[in-house]
Image (tube, rainbow, N blue to C red; front, top):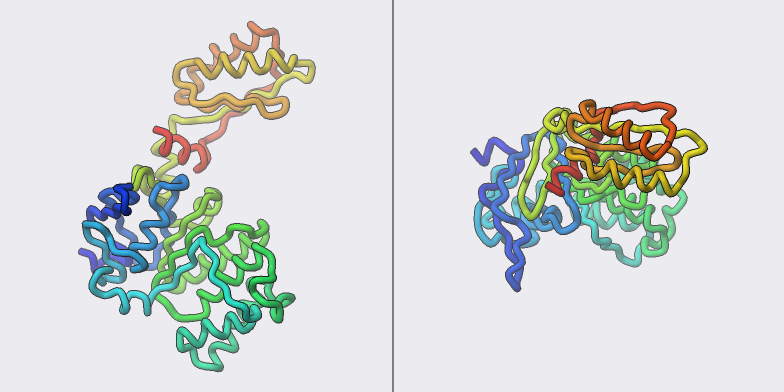
Amino acid sequence: MESDFAVYTKDLVKVYDGGKVAVDKLNLEIKYNEIYGLLGKNGAGKSTTIKVLTTLMNPTSGDAYVLGMDVRKKANAIRKRIGVVQQDESFDFTTVENNLKVYSMLWEVDRETSKTRINEMMELFDLEEVRKKRAFEISGGQKKRLQVAREFLHDMDLVFLDEPTVGMDPEMRRKVLDYITRRAHDGLTVLFTTQILEEADYICDRIGIMVDGNIRAEGTSKFLKDKFGKLKEIQVRLSDDSNAEEKSRVVDEISSIEGIEEARLDGNSVFILGYEISRKIGKIAMVFEKHDIGIESMESSEPSLDEVFLKVVNS
């Protein structure tokens, strides 16, 4: 079965010295040519999982296969066919251009191909203006762009991207995400982690939400939203003359209604997240009436991936 998937784990466990369990019987199946989003709060086990799958550390127990190969037995063969962008920086004292050249040499990319790809990456990742600057002198966002760019210089079957857009502005983030999507359409498999859930919603074929070292919810973005379909949000726009102190009391009181997950005040609106919320409109309206706060309008919406994520990790 492991050969049917680009990434396959069975009851994977990683325990650090001191007894901390970072990955706890993880079962993961990532298809070839798939963009798989691995989401979770800090400390959920995402980065540890990537380190095991990229052969940077051995699992404590269980099985892990990458491109059909056992991570314990075929580490060198796996490394030749994957790319990795980690959260940690790794730069030397060379210029941005030479940094890319060194990576091309390490991956044994021929000179003409290297030259073409370096120019492509310079343009794609907007690095031309810092081409001759030393890598450690450029900004944090530029460093991240360089880190991602150099990984795409070589041919690979699978790439691990651990929060690859940190520090990038929205325009550059979109360019990078679109490029990753194009590469996946050309046959690349991607394991992608991010704290910006709209990114996962935008590019991932499937998403796994990791909690305490294991997958607690998994599926397409639509599937996850449908699964939590009874969770909805309403926005209540208030009259301009509403008393600020009374608004806070209203939020507290609405939060205590059974089935309400969250009520928060944002400007002159109250956002209320809850289950079967349409059945609670009457109770909610009575709270505003009780505190003599006028309502201009109410609008409901489906849950976002952020809301699904928060529900899963906090359940």
